[in-house]
Structure formats: C-alpha cells, structure tokens
Image (cartoon, rainbow, N blue to C red; front, side, top):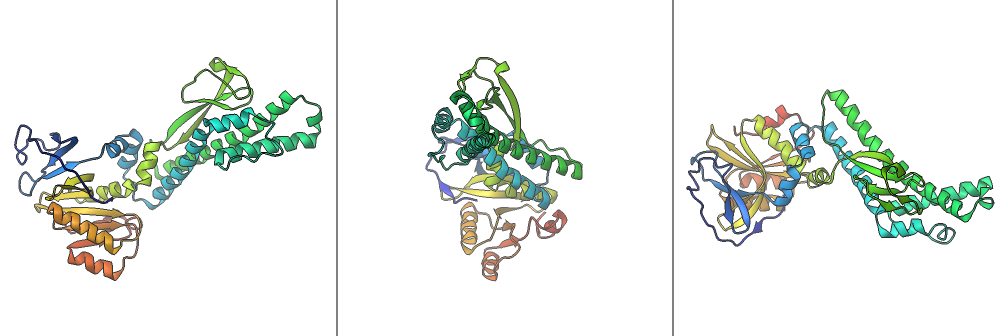
Length: 372
C-alpha cells in the first residue's frame, strides 16, 4: 500500500538458476543486506519475480494471534470487522494506560500526595486524568463524611492513593471486560473459537492497589512506601486485549490484503500477500496481492484500499505494474462508490476496480475476478 522504495545493491547469484530453482518458495538469495526469494509458480511459463518482505511485517504476520485472525477467514466479514476494529481501539487505550503508569511523572504525582491537592492540576494524559479524578473523589468523600479531621496525614495520603488507583483499575477492568464479552458473544453466535486475545497480568500492591509490576512479578518499593518483597504483597489482575503486533496488523490495513487473499484462494489462484517486488529499474515496489492462475498461465497484481480510490492511486499502481512487467491489475476497495474518472483511467491501464469488499459476500466478489 505504500509508495515503492528503491534499493541499490549488487546481485550475487547462489547455486542453481533463478528460473529453474527446485523449490522457489524455500530458496533465499541475498541482495546486499536484503533477503529475497525467487517466485516462479508457473515453472517458467511466466517471468519469475524477485520478492522480499520487510522484517517488521514478517514479525507481525508470524505472531500467533495474527495467524489465528487470518486463518479465521472472517477478515472481510462486516460484523467481525467492526468487532476487531473496536477491539483495536479499546486495546490501544488499555495498553497506553498501563504504559503511562510506569512513567516517572506518574510515580512522582502519586508519591507527593496530598501536597498536590487543592492547587495542582494533573498532567493532561488519560492516565493522569484518571488518577487525578480518583484522588479528588476520595478527598471529597472524606470531606463529606467528616473523617478528614479525624485521620492522620499518612492515612489521608493512603486514602487518596487508593482512590486514584481504584479509578484506574476500574477503567482497565472495564476495557478488558468489554473485549472479552464481545469476543465471547461473537464466538457463541458464529460457533467459532478465535485465539486472538492476549493477556497482561497486573501486580497490584495490597495496601494501595498501585500497579507495581507487569506480566512477571518483581520486587520493588510501592509509591505508598510498602516494600513489595514477595508475591503475597500483591494481588494479580489479568487483563485481556489485542497485543501490539495484532493492533499494528489492523491499523496498517493488512487485514484488507489478507481478506482479499482469501477470496483469491477461493478462486483457485496461487497467491502471495504484502511483498515487495523488484522492477526492471531495480526499484522495489510494494504489491499487496500477487495472484497466479496456473490453468490460464496468467498473473495479476492487486492493490487494496480501505476507503476512496483516487486518480493518483491508479497512476502509482499502474507505474508499479509497468516496471515489474505485469499487464493486469485489480484494485480492491472497501468503498462502495468510485468516480467515473477513476474507473475510466483504471480501464485504460487494464485495471479493474472491485468495490464494497466488506459489504458483499465472497461468491459475489468472485464473479468480479475474471481470471482463474
């Protein structure tokens, strides 16, 4: 989906010929510092391609939860799409809150209570605002109950700390529960089991409920002064969410490419997703989908768009095709409508546009793909 990138490297051929490799999917050559694989499913009937995949993308797509999402074959399911996009937002918020708690400014804010009360406004971050809200709520409750004059400064500080941590814990638990409930309801409705959620265990100080460590227990000194010397000093709170790799997979719209790949496989095509292909110029071009029809001895490229297709999108895609030597292309878009100008330009470049990939069933989409 991104612009093509160029690389100036020298090619050193390894043993075996490029066009006649025994297993083109396993053989890896070296192009300078960049590994690539020869791609020749047609066994010489069509020109072989030089492919590579970025390390970052490979790391994302090799993640177990990402693989589970892809193998569900539900990426273009409208209901499930809305669900995992919602999970992405909630998980991002949850992980951001957790990461902020370990920030030194947050620790200082908690350690300096109650000096902040009455004149200090918390830093404008979601975590600080939640902690500040909890502090002021606890102070208000103490004031209304009349206890504020009867307790020591240490107990007052502890009450404010507990109030702040309670507010944060409440928000984290709410996000986690919403994700789990949404997943459970969908699995029951569709009679499927999806392994796409990860968990993070919070270790909470028993005295004030501050998050002292994540995932694995570690000894520390809590903001309330409690020495966390062993696991009996903490309570564990598991939270469920999408992990960062799965969030990136969704945020980068890789789900569209893999959803389209499932449709192409249903057509009986040999496919690759999210690879860079070397053009005749020596430039590397990111191609979302590569599809080969062994029956027709034919190949086409696919470009995926989550949103409107613009004139420039067609020019860029056509440029990639021309440099690589591919004469047929498809643009797959979640948009329902494409302007006549874009359609005419695409046709002039031998590119078909398949619209509404989220709103149509697979059988309907298959009819728009002429190859295979």
